Image 1 (tube, helix red, strand yellow):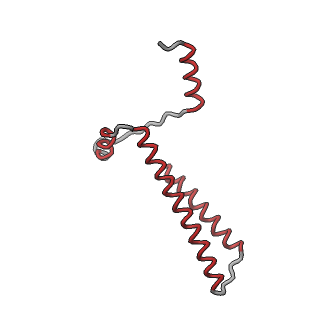
Image 2 (tube, rainbow, N blue to C red):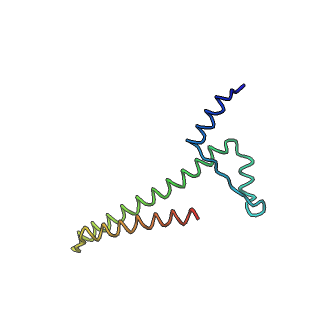
Image 3 (cartoon, helix red, strand yellow):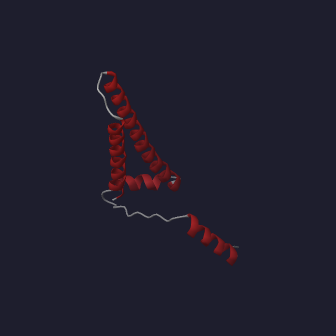
Length: 108
């Protein structure tokens, strides 16, 4: 049996270290999601894995685009164009801003 002290300690831990997330799922338009959910053995682990895969996907895309930008700038310089560092930094900053905006829009 759990003592009152244990209950208080667990409540304090939960308050300080956890968040409860909830979702409302439409049974008609999200039937495929509900079918997957009902068949899933480890719901919390599966949802966290899917979210982390999504995060990794965009992190990989961001790195790919930054590398592509760097390669493009290097090629342009090799071909005689002169791109000041400020231009490259500006484009890189705009890319960062675009990703932040994209993340914000995905949260809406």
